[in-house]
Amino acid sequence: MDEMESEQERISGPLPGMEFIAIPSGFFFMGSMETEFGHNENEVSSHRVFIKSFYMMTTPVTQSQWFTITEDNPSYFKGDDLPVERVSWNDVQEFILKLKERGPGRGYRLPTEAEWEYACRAGSETPFNSGDTINTDQANYNGNYAYKEGKKGIYRGQTTPINNFPPNSWGLYDMHGNVLEWCEDRYHNNYQGAPDDGSAWVEGGRELRILRGGSWNDIPENCRSALRSACNPDSRHPNYGFRLVCEK
Image (tube, rainbow, N blue to C red; front, side, top):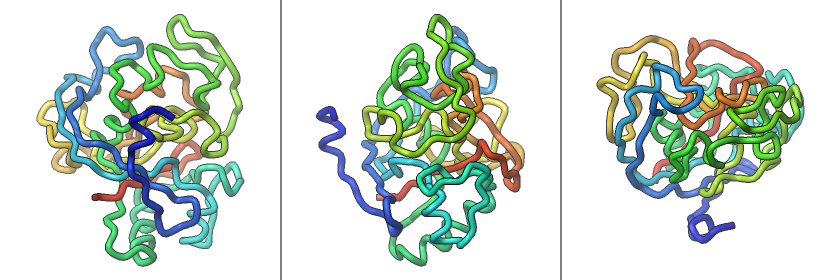
């Protein structure tokens, strides 16, 4: 654990194993340059964004945590310590309302797209928070494929338990791979007109909602910090999960 992570404040959520860590405020460049391998047009233009400090859940929400609130487990891959999946954006909003009843006074919500990328990068400017490439000892993705000059690895074919891989330098696990994570924002084709204060971009755009981080079934370039995915808010898939933030 480095000095930054050791100094970060942590708070417990209302469910067993639900831990949030303080993400420091700061500026970062959101998006990617055309020279980044795997770059997509919806990642332009790279722009400077200010993020206020907030708490982010250190892991995706687990199936055990989901079941405690909903008394249901929709996941395709079963396991208490596996991330919950096959949950829609709309399902998550209902989960949050019920969670607030257990933890009154806390502002639980999905991260904004800008908050998610800022937290994933943890100060890095490379395609992955681990550097210029990634391997399957660092994240759960389709290891039949390599990123640039990187090596191929393991294709596990399913989700893996939380805390199974090293965290980024801000103490967050599974920001690359395992499950795509819902964000609050609507989808826009590019960043023209995007907020520069880290707030959710919910005006205009399409009804689709943002997903970030790549999944167990994605090739590594689709797990980059800047990669943007989107789907209908009522869509459920074994690739789709989420983590929460808590406002300071």
